[in-house]
Length: 544
Image (spheres, helix red, strand yellow):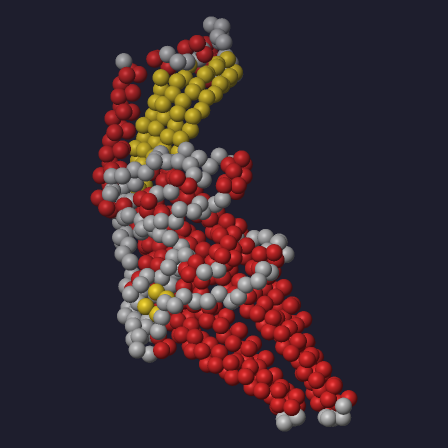
């Protein structure tokens, strides 16, 4: 009967605790997060004004391509970006931070349940002195056994009820942090794809400059032979030979420097791909030109930037996590309700341990209130609020910085296109001038100074055109990076590659945290975490 009554009491107390905790959802303290106001912008560099040549080919009516590098129509670049997705080490670190954030979320979810649980068993053997207390008198008349033994087993638990939403605000903060880490991953993805494309364009630019230098070496070698022949025939002076020799060797001197720069660019690309230097030489040494930009570039409107830029999303989620921390701090201002309990068995003989008469238990509901906190709790709330306000300002600054990056890249792209147009005309004219001057020198109607000047101008113009053509593409890459290109809201790629997950699973029991299928739709779509106030009765399952 006693055992049945104790079990009923424990059952009633458990139900009452659950009800109190669920009803406590209505008393959620702290602010609910809303997206901070951001500076507004209507148009990009008047990109919609198509009447001016410098704005031609830029459209606000089309969204930028997610896989923008494919619009450059370069199979080698496509392959390099794919390798970076699989092997870039910085991207792998960002993926592992997502795994860490999931585990941190699991920790705070566990605080919804009894915070302490303990199962124990014990045996005690004790011998009491016969020369103390009543035993000393009794022992004169009756022989007693002064030894005692006790067998025990039981379960202890302690549960601080989440009346004011402290735990739920902690879950909200951890969820926002998880989404922020996913946004950081996508931000790294944007940076990596842009850096890979830029490094590849740099390699192609240097290769083209090397080809130009070698072609000019051949042309200048021919000019040197002509001057030497004319000098031997007494048609000209040794000065022409010296000038031709100086020009040829100055051009030759450019080749080692360019080859050194090419090696550095290849090594930088190898690091981005997570491979040793030299491993990608076979791919990039194949003949290839500097990629050409598409005829039309879709950039969308500035308002779309808030949705596309992962760093803006990450700044928003960090503000959301800090907003929840205000509620966590405020909960300490109110009394905390808790329940501790114990149920088990105690008996002198082991054979009697698990019988009804050996059942024992303890129920201890309590309340604590740190009301004499000398302002420490209130000042902690103020600290959390100040940090939240700073993150709001950081969010706004991130938006402004994003606007500036896109504006700068877009302006540089459009102006580089103009510059490339002018330089292409200059190169065409320089080639013609060089041919005419060389022919006139052969005919004896012009001196070698004119040949020297035209060949020098041609080389410089060709090199500048190659550099500017590369600048056009690099600035277009910067435009796409600024617009947040290179990631997908429903990113289907695994954050951590399978080999790494297998290695981690062999070392530690990760449950479902390493399972990519366990990612929630909110994580995939980078949605803000729901406020506990919107669904106060929902308990999230713990990850065992």
